[in-house]
Length: 353
Image (cartoon, rainbow, N blue to C red; front, side, top):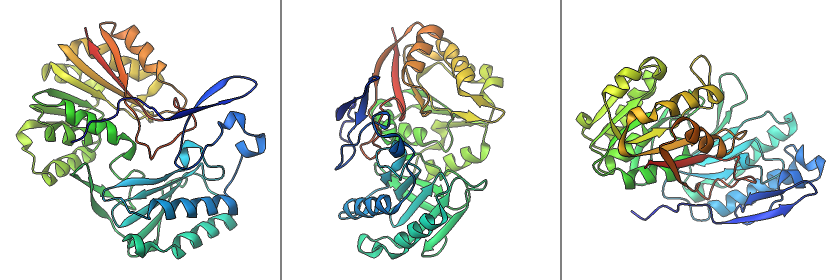
């Protein structure tokens, strides 16, 4: 497998009267940072011009359809005015469009018309779903083709079972692709702890990469059950995988007893009612790292809250686990452009010694 780029290379900068902002270069465009745009553009909403941009982007992205699951359009990076609340994922024949904020009725109708009339068949797509993430149940409309509850997708040659139309999240966060690749490349012979494991994407990557054993912990036992399914899909030996369906903060003794670990992966939600608050609980996890790691142990600490930059993690590790040193920040996949490097996914590597 080819090496994973370690740092973000494609950047430009824009000037304002206040400060300088780092801007990721999205495909075929050079957007200004939102703080450098006129006020009316910062408050942009979906409109005919924005939908024309989306149409053109999809035509380009699907001229040669991806052979594996990929994000086709990432409006959440705020690079395209009027499309900041929209994403489009390619799920190998299924196209999943997610709306994170309700547009005006006329623009929503125009979006649906675009999606229904688009020449999907030329790309091999047979189903198009529109997920309304702003609604309490994240209601999904099936605009083209029949409803699908479960789907097997591939990433890096590995297979994952995802849910469609039933849950807010499908089961695999596509922006963590490089993180899973990195774990796969590092894992040979390691004992790995995967905290906030969800459906065990990191675990699948680690076992595929030759990890000796992986301990997955998540309080959502249904997600861990799907993790077992994912390992089975890839023909993995489940005797090398442990699944702990516990609240981490009530289970430290069990987690420590199963160690020490050569690699600890921390990938929590930014907020989970009643169980995790980023600003308080991440520090509690970092504080335990010296008890979890081998003398040369490594940590992959992840965070996807746009309100906090990488310094939140670097400063936290320096304060709570001073024996660890910052090594690098992994690059995000190019299909996830963002006007501000600090707003996107942060996946940072730390090492003992």
